[in-house]
Image (cartoon, rainbow, N blue to C red):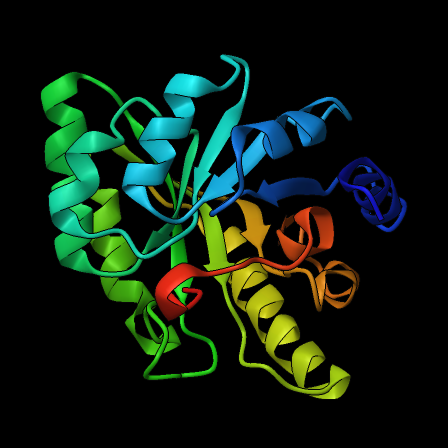
Length: 225
């Protein structure tokens, strides 16, 4: 199907209270314009260099989401350019985000990335580390936590539901507490292969790439993050 048809097909499965992020990594500006033409304004990138290039070449009213592993030495390049950083995964990264945004007089909105499947190949903190990073976030003046994000392990539907359910339980638990600089507004989980399951388990922000743009072609055997 064409990109526009793909968007229409995906949107049929997404309630109005759920934000659809078009994951446009490796995709051209022309392809992104097709998605934009359908009314989508949320786009996700996972490489800082690609993100900053596309920001300069694309429409001004887009909300950019950084969804890849964020290296500390790259934070300075995205200050003031992204609506939401989905991948706060360490105290050291938090310190760098706070430092760079404070220097610019701006505030970063972030999601804490949870490694719910405890996979060594994935970034994110373990659930038992959440209190430590929340305590540090409360002390920040230029970082606001807006929720949680997760990339779950691949598995069957029952396994997916279990991980998504555990994320929703954590999100609900944290949302019942009163914190400084922290609110549980977004639960970012679910991608092309499992976003419908994620939504049914409580996700209100899904990140869909191949389901919109089609299969990606990686040069030099580049692996997807």
